[in-house]
Amino acid sequence: MMIRDYPIEERPRERMVKEGADKLSNQELIAILLRTGTKNESVFQLSSRVLKELGSIRHLNEMSIDELTRIKGIGQAKAVQIIAGLELGRRVARKRAEVMTIRSPQEAATYLMEVIGLDQQEKFYCLYLNTKNQIIYEKTVFMGSLNSSIVHPREVYKEALKWSAASIIVSHNHPSGDPSPSREDIEVTKRLIEAGEIIGIECLDHLIIGDGRFCSLKEQGYI
Image (cartoon, rainbow, N blue to C red; front, side, top):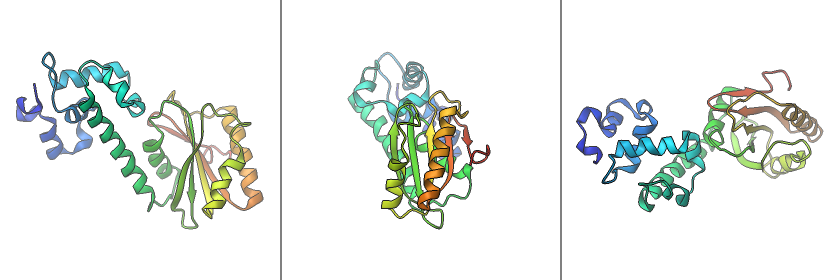
């Protein structure tokens, strides 16, 4: 069954036009991307099962085309549609950063939730700012469990010097969803602050991104 076969009031496309995309459930948004179901399942049943097999919408961000096609009912064409939608969203988020001015930990966290908040692997991600606190560059500096001996200030500030950044905001995600800082998080932050003071580039904050939540080490008093 296709989306058009449902009563108008149940069609997610019509609901999106009338109420906005933010009012749709994850199941409805995926149904729009899939467009059609299979001979045994409606598009809504298929989208519901896709979510169930993923376990969490967070996992969708890391899926490849091959991984998606392993889900029964998802062929290459549907997988491509989903991946294209995800990639477009990521590109729009990054484009926003070109003119984005960071005025508070909340603004930085809101942006970073879109960039690394759904990743299932821990990433140490840096925002490089000019004197107006506008993002001029951003980069994943390290991937994996945070360790003060691995995340070296040299790698973080190398890009800051290259881009003539006035300050930086460092961040990493907690795939568990809990943004509470660990001892390693605090140690890494202190090392980065000390290094920044030496070379004259301020580390404004270290944000830990969880599932819809964040922790600002500046607000916690560590900076």
